[in-house]
Amino acid sequence: MAERGAGISRRIGRFRGDLRLAALLIVAGILLAGRGWLADHPQHNPWAPLDLDDPPGWTTRTKLLALKDDLAECRAVLERSDVSFRALESQGEGACHRPDRTVIETLPLAPRVPPTTCPVAVGLELWLRDIVQPAARRHFGAEVSRIEHMGAYSCRRLYGRSEGRWSEHATGNAIDIGGFVLEDGRRISVLGDWPGEGEAAQFLREVRNGACPLFATVLSPDYNAAHANHFHFDQSGRYTGVCR
Image (cartoon, rainbow, N blue to C red; front, side, top):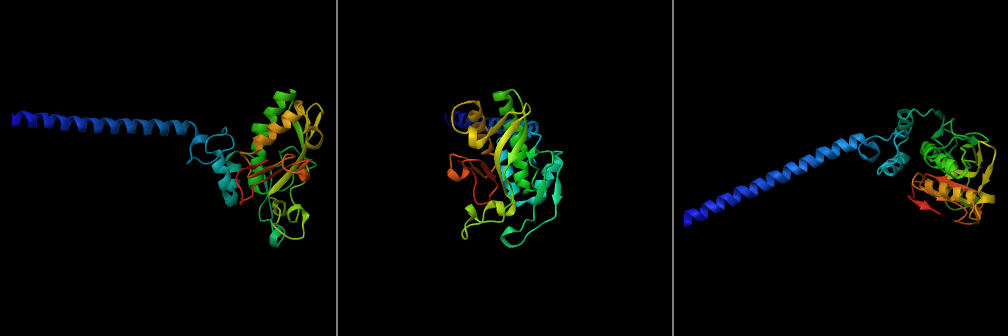
């Protein structure tokens, strides 16, 4: 009887070992499949370098946030993505020192494309391609030919006060957007078209909301009266995900 019990015990032991081996093989298969899937979907791969040609993915926002502290990598992203840009010499001093002055000349900003920090430029490139143009086609059947801005650089404190925190505009790490002009000449302005429920208002809310994953701070007329006529976008290192 003891020998029979020992045989059963040994068979159970082998069975448990087989289960462990099968579990390890399953896990290995899942890992290999996952590795292959990530290779085919780099926009979801946290280890893949950011490429602006990839569609937005699970890790895009994290990669964009990382660019705020790495100018060399930010410009490498533009080069990797075949986005033409100019790197201008640094200017200013003190709180208004601008070591990063990057210009993507293909952006349809008017009256001209201003120098901004590289992370702001990257955010604008993605916003135009993935948010603004698709929304314009859906709502108006035409693309945006010009985005009217109200400036990027301004050596000042928040709201022009004499004391307190410096604005992100002081280093060109922000831009204010006032309106959009379509290919057929129609104009949509934040000041005039934000109120209401029409196509223009819906478009403005869609492009405001779409900017939120791309910039650290997005402010609109919903925030306060000071933003009644523009959207404020910045890549502040202090905040992630302020969207109003």
